[in-house]
Structure formats: C-alpha cells, structure tokens
Length: 385
Image (cartoon, rainbow, N blue to C red):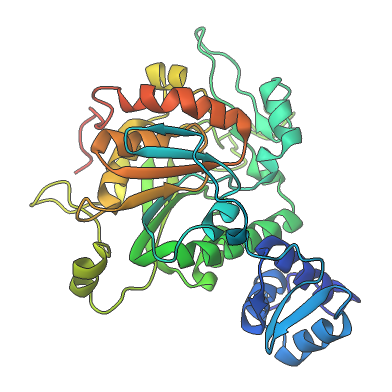
C-alpha cells in the first residue's frame, strides 16, 4: 500500500510519534506507537525505525518509562486518573452529563465498566471547531451549508464534507484510532459501539476502529431524506440541467462495532450481559434497516442542535444495545443529550460526555424535554417489510 504521507521526509516519523503521544496523553508501548503510525502513513513502519526516532529524541521529547514503553518528556502524558475525578454537571433520572473531553473521562473510569456506546460524533472535526461553530451560529456558513427557509420553516444547517482535505481525513483516522483504544479499556467484552457516520467519511472512521481492535459487525442504514447531494454544477445550472454532481443522500450509515467476546456468545451474555442485540419482539430480530425522518417539531424546539437525531430512531438503537436490558450506555459526544433522553425513556442508565459548554447548557434543558415526549419511540409510516 502506498504511504498516505511520505515518511522518509526528515522529521515526519518523529512528528507523527509526537502527535500520537500528545493525543494519547499516557505512556504507550512500541507496538501501540507502530499501530498509530500505520494509520497515519498507510503502511507499517519498521520497529527499528521507530526505536531509532525514539532514542534520538530522548530525553528532549520522549521518556523511556520501561523497556518498550514511552511517554512525552514534559510530563503531560501522565494518566488523568491521578487528577481530581470528574463530576457530572447534571443528572436526570438515571442519566448523568459531564462537561469534559471524552478521552479524559475514559481515562478516569475503571476497566470494563461500560456495556455499550451509542454516539453521533463530529464526523470531520473541522465542522465543530470554534471558528466553524461561530460561523454556523451566526448564519455565515463556512463548512456548514445554511439551507434557505421554506414555507416559513427554518431548516437545519448541514456540514459539507466534500471540502475536507487529505490532511483532514488523516486526522480523523488517527483521532478515532486513539479514541477506540481508550474506549476498549472501559468497555466490557461483547459491548457494542453504534456510531453515526456519513457516507463520505465512514470508511475512514471504520478503518480506524477496526485497526484499534474493535470487531466490525456491519452497519445500520437509517433511511432519511436530507438536503445533501443532488445539486447541479455550481454556477452552471442551466448548462447542465440534467446533471447531479453527486447522488442525493437518502440514507445515513450507523457503524456497528463490538469488543471481542469472552468465549461464546452465550458465555458472554451470562457473564457480562452483552454480546448481542435485544429483539423488538420474540418473533422479530433487530434489523439493520430503519425508516426515519429528520428531527422536527417539538424535538427541534427542545434541542436546536444542528445534527439532532429523532427520538423515534434513537430509542430503537438504545433499547437494542443492552440485550438483557442491564448495564450503562455511554455517549462520548453527547451534544444536546438526545441519546441520554432516549435511554431515560426506555429505562436504561446512561452517561453523556460533551466538551462544548454551549451544547452542555443545551442538553441540561433538552434531556428532560426529549425524554418526556410521548410517541417518540415509533415511526408511524408503513414498514418497509
């Protein structure tokens, strides 16, 4: 496989190791560093090369903690578990909300303490940078497409991932690799990770999660019509009236991954209460094709988040990921708290972590309102089957 970056250019391997350890914020083994470099460069860097870069830059940049283990020299890599434990900023019923970076929160949690993750992360990170969030909230666009009003209704902004550069995609891959390594430690065997994505970047995220050690178990197709795609060439609508530059988006992928089982599925279910999906009924398995619609009406009023998912959809996902109805669901990118609201509605314990104070404040108000909505656990349209 061709390298994604030319690792032979001076300093690139060193800088990649530095970036990984800065993101990781803990000591890491030589094997972990090599795995991370593989996600960055697109192929495997020889162990001898990694050792050479580590030795040449020790003790200026790196510290050899013990044979085969390194951390940053400035001490910033020390585990967050030694810091003051994070406390929830809001609780409601069986849900708890934290204002924190999810990776910091992960590092303070006991091993094997979470039974499932259901989350809708920032797909490209660029769209949730302070600069792009400010543009979106001011209606100026940037990476966010601000749709025009229609019949007096304001439509939600949509991020445009066609503007992402190769470097942005590389950062996504490295971030989710590191994120998954942190998540694996706190997940119990057989725990599922169900993560919203986008057709333009899902392959990058999926590759990172698989390389980190999670098992890919398929995708859920959320059938939903959005405003993405279908447009004619910009400033050439009349000339190419019969052309769409890209397909109109009519579905959204939700990635399904699982931490490896401990023994057989039935063994894992007996010990860890995880390893499968809860059926909607005895005669109907949980399926990977779910009809949906954009969040609207009372939901949008309760939680004006730009990528809010409807409770009718989320409650189906949340109910299914705890096969025996026991355990804790975590949402590391909680946003307006819609996953926590869905868990509360179906009677599950949940934890949300959100780094943006703007959305934390939104979630504090939105969680009780969304959880209280009646009839939000179903979609009244005819079944596809």
